[in-house]
Picture: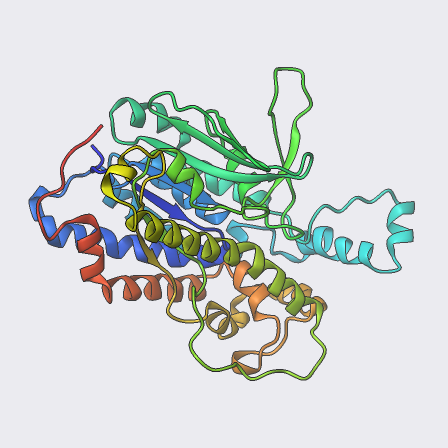
Length: 407
């Protein structure tokens, strides 16, 4: 049984950066075992699990094995520590030529030739291998059993509709929960499929959009892309699903240290601009929503208890764990681990150099599904979490009394 009060896990997007989340989760599992010993439950401490983009894949993998949390985390660590780009997208010369080279051709004067040949490249990279990985990594068919056993309250993943422009939260739950509707944000209760995960993790321009059926049988499915796009309130799904405290794991630094980074006088190339855009999509909304939650909590704290009791709005206890180092800088040290065809493709848009002199490392940081990089992020996530072990134990109340059961 999951722990009470109902605790939510929020995993943000970020492509290969999501390896950091796995390191945080491995340290959380270790701290729970150390604090509770034989009293530690096999079930997940998270009754609500929500994820976006690559975070949606991690979230779904945890949800499907909510009855064996430690084993689920160990499996995530194993997969992410042994990653290679070929598990996510076609990284061989032929695959890169078919997708990336054709796509770049469309952006140049060669679009005339591409049109004449009726070529329709859809993305920079072909992520067909990811579908096979999801089949092995995320046993979604276990979810009904997990719900029936009281191991999970609800799970949600997000995606953005290219067809209609709205941001969708697709969720499933043990008991009926009324969907919510906000400006440009729609919630839909539905059994989750691997198509939802492919849609949520379809990084714009980089991976192709995925089709999802939204209406009654016979209605044309809509095209969806990465859930981080147009995601103005990343914490909202977990709160709507009933979580009253949140562990939030980011994929980028929440705050930069004092002092300006050295500026580069050269005009930014396409890779630098694309990396900046992706960072805006993946990182900014989460930081803003956390600030919004903190302001609401402070405002509620100023109200008399008698007034707060009658309000639907409740304070949310939150613990935020985010990288203590710039993941762009770590990526810059590992650019050489990318397969040669992918390096050649990225050089075409401006990713060059290595280490402190690298350009375009922000873009590469989302695509570096290589073990040297993902292991570094897992280790960083575990280290950052262990450095805050007292905060973690206080948040879960593991240093006060044993975890209680809830349904």
